Amino acid sequence: MPQLIVKGVEHAVLAQVSGELVEEMARICGCGTDNFTIDALQTVSFFGGTTVPAYPFVEIAWFDRGQAVQDELALAVTAHLNLAGVDEVEVAFKVYKESAYYINGRVCG
Image (cartoon, rainbow, N blue to C red; front, side, top):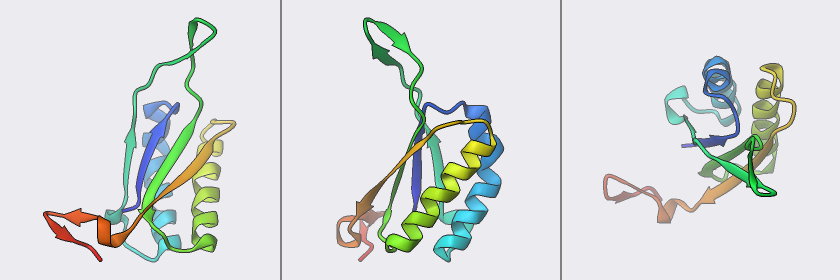
C-alpha cells in the first residue's frame, strides 16, 4: 500500500518509470519500496460511436498520510509520466480506513 491503478498509459512507459517512481514515492511516504504496486488496466474508451484512446489516469489507493504527502505523490507521478512523454495525466486518491482493510483475514487498524 499504496497501490497505483493506471489506465491510458502504455505498458512500456510504466515499466520505464516504475523503478525511479517507486523509489521517490517510498521516500515521500517514509516506507519501503516493497509497499507499492503499480497495475495497468487495459481499457477501451468510447466517444461519439467510436473507440478513442483512453485518457491517462492514475488512481492511488492508500491509507491517508495527509495533504502534504498526497500533494507530493501526485506531483511525483505526474512528473515521471510527463518526462516519459505523457503530456497530461490525472491523479486521484482513494482512501482506505485501516479498520476496513484486511491482510490474510486480519484487520490492519
